[in-house]
Image (tube, rainbow, N blue to C red; front, top):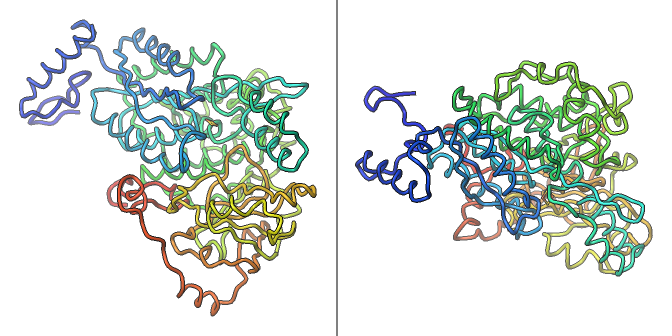
Amino acid sequence: MSDEKNGPEPKGLARNAANYGDKEFALYLRRSFAKSMGYSAEALKRPVVGIVDTGSDLNNCHRTAPELIEAVKRGVLMAGGLPLAFPTISLCEPYLTPCSMHYRNLMALDTEAMIAAQPMDSVVLVGGCDKTVPAQLMAAASAGTPAVQLVVGPMSANRYQGERLAACTDCRRYWARYRAGDVTEERIQEIEGSLAVTAGTCGVMGTASTMACLTSTLGFMPLDAASIPAVHADRLRAAEEAGAQAVRLIHKPVRPDELITEKSVENALRVLLALGGSTNALVHLAAIAGRVGIQIDYRRLNVLSDTTPVLVDLKPTGEGYMEDFHTAGGMVALLHELRDLLHLDTKDLDGVSLGDRIGAGPRFVDRTYIKARNAPVSPVGGIVSLFGSLAPDGAILKRSAATESLFETEARCMVFDGVEDLAARIDSDDLDVTKDDIMILKGAGPLSTAGFPEAGYLPIPRKLARAGVKDMVRMSDCRMSGTAFGTVVLHISPEAEAGGPLALVKTGDRIRLSVKNRSLDLLVDEAELARRRAGWKAREAPKRGWDALVQREVLQAPQGADLRFLLPEGR
Ligand code: FES
């Protein structure tokens, strides 16, 4: 690109010069400072590949970031580029309060700004843990710089006393048994050290792995790179290839918005459904698509869900782990089964069509984990959206992780007003709840001080867990971990903090859930709701810092819970 007045757009280290009113001096200064790091003049003339470094002592999933970055650099250098790594915010689910989702948009903002402001011709995004890949793709889409996604890869499952364990479905399973009194204090402590024993993201089809699969479907990385285990040598080869790919992109640029299209987003939704993947991926995909002006239609999601089988049998809905998915044939095997449902003309970073990427499929498929179309895990997709008087703008249910006998439920509800209230009362022996009630958590959506946490998987009240209750209908305006399971309605929109109908629900009200009709209704008459609405008051908004900005700008779940001012101008 060039403009007539200023000549061709600068490349490499000359991009994005600091503005002192003297461009030549700015570049002279930059080269001089770069030379202080030992780079030769020849090296500094090369095209620059930025590498986003999200290694952090507070991100166990990204423990291998240093060696991955070294391999990316090798790939860049071999292809004739200059690799320059730089840090951004890194987010790992268990280490942040109120929750990591509260900072996804901050990471996206940081990453976009650093890609756009610093000198680089293309960028490799090294991410993996739940919120990092969405944040990086949102950033890349907005920055417009050609980008390659590299994920750290999933952890490997541990062998423990005759069973396999990996974060975090097994964490939840054991914790639920501990709460129910089935597992002793001593054993739960021993298991704590056995659940996550390698580097890498959670070892099941949770949010991180789901997002890796969707990202490869969108074309930002090779299909097999979605599932290579974190500690496998192939993961380093994938990193080297990401570096080489980034240099190819400099010679033949492809902007991120050329890959994020109506068709590729629909492909990604199909894959999400066929994986029985994480409900969080729906929020993240909406945010990524939103950055290029595409909105996901929850009603269209239901059409796709009814025509997309679940083909992958992994935890949390099935039995296997990500390492099984990889050796079973991975994404190529899955997409080959789905090929008649996909838009095969969408392209990857090399301009290769999805049809050609799938080709004749893999040489080997293990049907234990990746089912054939004529013998699916489920004939319909894993997620459905629900609409009704309780969720005028929609809610979702992961039916593949739910109990079918609870799909049609009309019952009295028991309400928790925020996560603190939940924590304070859930284990009380006096809690007014039975196994047939619907448990509601409100005040935990994107606008809440809780920051849209993964609290939708409300624990079964201790007294019911001890009586053997394994599942109940639970509903909220928050999210659920991709590694969790149960009959859990999520993302009720508008959320309670926005004054949606959920804000008006009281313990004792009746609610009707119908998966068959895709409906979710509050069975309280209008006059009573009007009376409650007149008495409802929004909480006082935070006044400073990130929390205040979120409060002012955050969108609801169906819009990806992005910040309004980060959408493309005009939306
Ligand atoms: Fe990082 Fe699960 S905590 S992927």
